[in-house]
Image 1 (tube, rainbow, N blue to C red):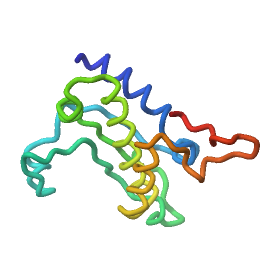
Image 2 (cartoon, rainbow, N blue to C red):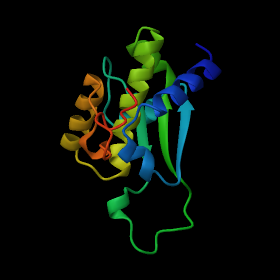
Image 3 (cartoon, rainbow, N blue to C red):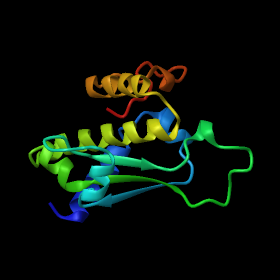
Length: 145
């Protein structure tokens, strides 16, 4: 898959993430890389058959002090080749994997625990709206999926 095709799927996946994430994201760059470096995998103690689909780098919101500012954007890296491999090249599955990866990494940005992130991911996989997304008069919470 070309990088342009993958970027189009990333844009599609961004539209599926819970509103509570999308509404409050500030100064976060989403970048696409082919794959994580061997050094990064070693540092994170990730060995095959496990793989890394994405990575958040920055200061989580709850850890920021009042004087946090004039900083480079936080960064979420999406690793195209591992995502494609995990989904066997199926575009629908790739969109879901990108969405879940974004949710996971944004959870770190918001300072959520792994358990909280997993709850949001589980609802995402089931196509259920996030309770925090429900707006008055909108029975499905406007879920993107």
